[in-house]
Length: 293
Image (cartoon, rainbow, N blue to C red; front, side, top):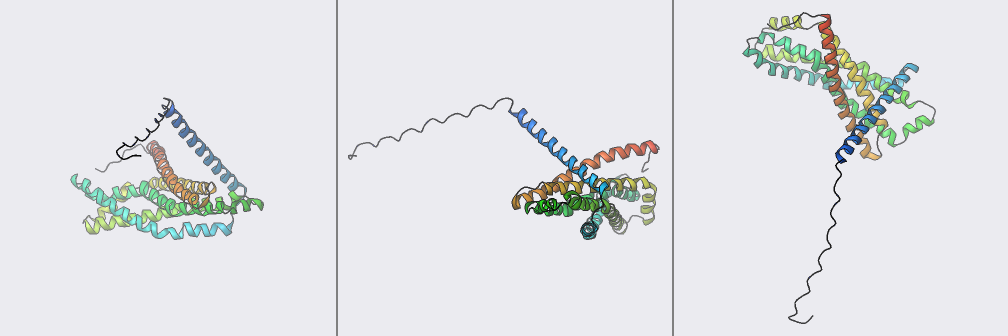
């Protein structure tokens, strides 16, 4: 190139091809895929639960596997349930006192705190602790067995992996969650009483008098019935995610996370449905209304 000659202009980039327009039916296709995936997962989970139920009716769970599950789920969950239960009772007292004080009904604080604990927060709290501490651990444990082909080895030896691995864990969840719920209720009641009577200055007599006036045996029974449903759902979901774990460490971690998320959603859905059903049943059996006044 000689000096003074202008440099040639760089070649123009080829014209970019315009993306094809998305069809108007794309949102419908995505929605259909999501619904099909949801129905497939629910159906697979239902078949898994039915297989576990058939195995329970056919054979008893192995004591060698059931006892460690009972220890892990029951004994080692007690400190977490006690601490969280106590604080929930105090939080309920804090949040309820101001509203009741404006209506000059602060002496009824024991009824509000303890009825909420026994009917709703005690069972839900114990179930959430179980889903976070035990459900995730169970999913990771069974997922590791899936990844390392130990479940396939159990099947190759002629044993039923559902009855051998799933039934003891689900049975331990169902059997022990009512006890954990009772402990959460008791610690919540103690925490609410401690804050209300010792710090807020509410009369000890009125606190327990209104508590006994408003809490019935039906409230305890409905709370324990909810806890049984929560325990069964947590056990089945955790074992199902572990059995269908993906490959590698990433798959095990995903199974543990999905176990907690799905268990938490199941707890909330069951709490709503059972709350509506048990509430309607209560008004059918005892139609007389209750009031704080």
